[in-house]
Image (cartoon, helix red, strand yellow):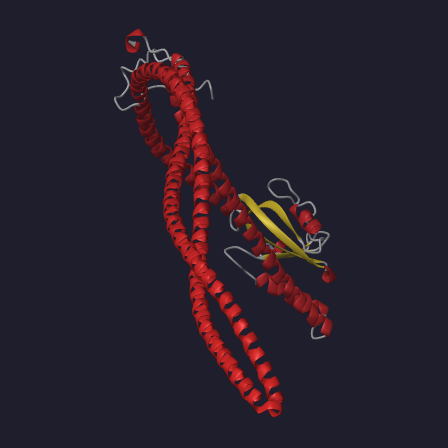
Length: 520
């Protein structure tokens, strides 16, 4: 294949196809001949078995006694002699000697020994008949024999079957020259059609080959050589496509080479610029990364300070809240103390009023004691006047006066005690009133302190919320700064990778040779 030219390679499929078609045509003709031969053999087998059936029919008549055996043989031969099929088909009967028993076309040969009889090719076909008939199913025999009323021997196929009880070999045959003639005609017709097809296909292939050559523009080896040069990076190889068609492959390759030269030149220039710019970006990213890291550190420290301040302010807010709660408890205590002082003053006044009532009662008791004393004096006077009769009454009057004096003395002592108690109760009431006033003043002061502490707690809460918001903002700024630092690092890595890719691109582009003019 390597030694063939491009045009020879284009014609090779047609030649191979014609050879294959010729082989297929001959094979089809041979298969058709074999099919016809098989059909002819089947016909001979069927006809021979019809003759055998006739013989068996008369043999059964002889066996049943309807006919004698000689009569049965005679009538069977008559039936076979009269049978005709096709154009020239008939039966002959021989025995195993071989000897002719019946021949409808040559009755003179009946009874003759056929062992020495041979056909035109020298084959002893009757001996072959006798040998083939020994098989249970009979057999075929090839020989040559002239047609009736002719002398030219032609190919004939015979089939024999033996009826053993009578030692009859029933033979029939068919000429096969028509099958060979049909085979020859089929081969000639196929070859004629093949020649016509070959002529048409040759014209079509010639037209297609011319179109292919015109489409390629020359031998494909030239295109392969140019493509190999381009694949190796050699873009300055001359194409020599002046004679090629404008729409041919070689012209397209030449146009591709010119386009590649311009494109590679532009890519080379762009890769140089990318390498330079990526280097500058890499340097800037390094500085930006360092500044971003410093900023992230400062923000982290600020966040830590804000966290500490937030903790202190939250602690102050907690203390202010605790002080507010204590002030509220103190107000509650002073309220209870004021209520108790007010209740004590009211109780002192009630006691003072009751002491005055007791003084009045004691005054009544003193009056009663005074009057009792007077009555006792009067009773003593009257007892003295009564003499001995009033002595007992005088004793009673003396005792009553003594009791009245003692009651008057006790009432005086009780008055003194009540007066002292009333004085002390008055002093206690004044002290309780002063205590209530002091408690009221303390409650007012504590209320002011509570208001101030509440304002301080509210301010501390607001400061805590504000500082927490600032702390959250600083933490968010810290996170964003760290993300920016990570992005800057990734950008630096990407730029370094881009610089590496640019260097690889420069290395890859350097493989191509495009000439000084195109490079400039």
